[in-house]
Amino acid sequence: MQTALRGLSGIATANSYNKRLQPITLSAAAPSQTVFSLGYDFHLGAGDNGNVFGIANNRDSFRSLVGSATYTYETSVCRVRPRSAPTAPL
Image (cartoon, rainbow, N blue to C red; front, side):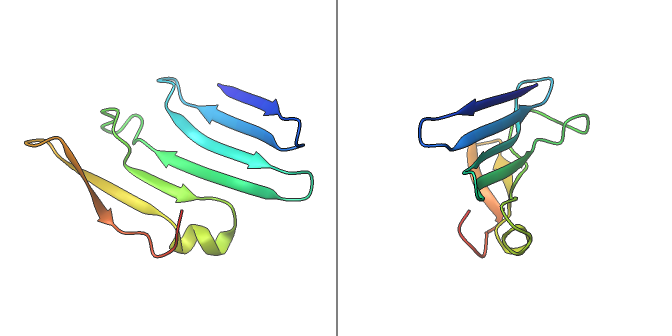
């Protein structure tokens, strides 16, 4: 499923979701450039339990290499811990 919306400021959003309505891509673009783009990994079809497995910054190729993070979950205490900390802000 995809959604799109253009605001009064000229920034357009384009979001896509999987069949469980979990976000796959959330992005926003001005007429001249992309200002925000995140990709989400839920491991759909391979153990998707609803928890985010990873988030990637898709805005540009450099940031996607250093601005991504993966997560693990401690089921005994229901707490989220970064498995690999991002080296640049998402």
